[in-house]
Image (cartoon, rainbow, N blue to C red; front, side, top):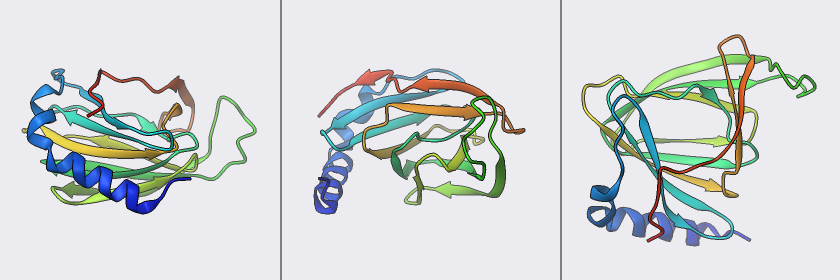
Length: 163
């Protein structure tokens, strides 16, 4: 069972040694990269490096809880909520909730398959965020604005550091 203290300590430790792992993060022009920096049986911590103009589609986090924090820069986050009964494998009814800009030190939390978001770096500088998933993120779905399911995928990494 996951213990909040263990998670808090792991994330704090990851941030404390940021100068060791941040230079190792892969970069991809116009896109973001996902690097796993800690992995435990009940959760994982990823660092996402966002180049200018990078963005995700609208997506869920499968059955995982996701907590994020911006470590550098700023990201625009549009939140959506899934209101259907999951009966149609090709379509979801989603509603727009809000959009905000998250800056250094701010973060967000999403819980499971109903909380959706789209994240983009519309600034001219890189952004860095840290993401905690519990249980570990294994699968997700992406959606277009009309709610059509455009991708059912499994989680992957651009790099694994496991500090």
